[in-house]
Image 1 (cartoon, rainbow, N blue to C red):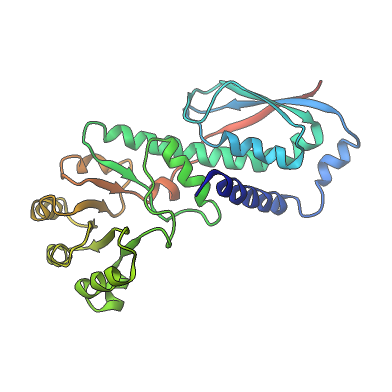
Image 2: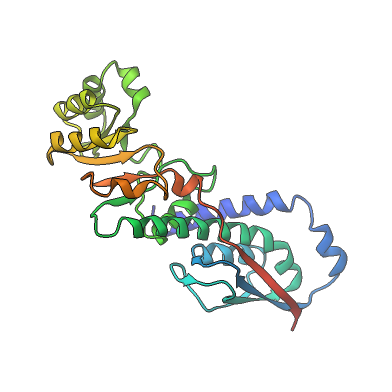
Length: 283
């Protein structure tokens, strides 16, 4: 997606999140702050990690009031430590209060994903393996979560179902076999699309290779079978390892010989990074 499309999509999603949090009015803020008063609040890091989502954080406030000002000490991709003051937000105190939770929800979630991804990327250093995300994302958060993976040093797999051909077990079942599924995909999809096939055993690997798959996914296989599969493929297709891969077990895959490792845990299991807006006062 180009930058304009991405911005429009992001704005629509952020506005939806704001509407979820403010269905009519912010009763508490309106009760204690009856009129305009300029103020400022600090964005403080309460946990070591990798920042991701600062532009989304800022956009939440901008959509509420385009006069909000920011003074940031860090950028996406920076490693920050507990106690660091990431920046200051200035403007109408009512906007600072009403946008706080939504803005932090995005920043905490995205920074948590970037931090978790970066931890795994470090475990794969020197192996030549690229770390991929999946479509196991939070509904209406994919554009933000996949961006956070990239900030953390990972790579994006296909963005959505329109973005590539991935023949999984149920597609193969629907077609009748790997051979038929690949044949039909080649007939239907534009020639510029690569075709990936999910396999669960060495017989399926052999069939996918013979059918002309561009990428062969080794799903939930034993380490021994994955090594045999890589030897069997011998560079004639790219290889991807998948199946319940987390920070705790990924190191064992470093000498398998696959090109890619995909992990749904990057987006469905990363804990949030603890960040806070503190010390609000009038200026």
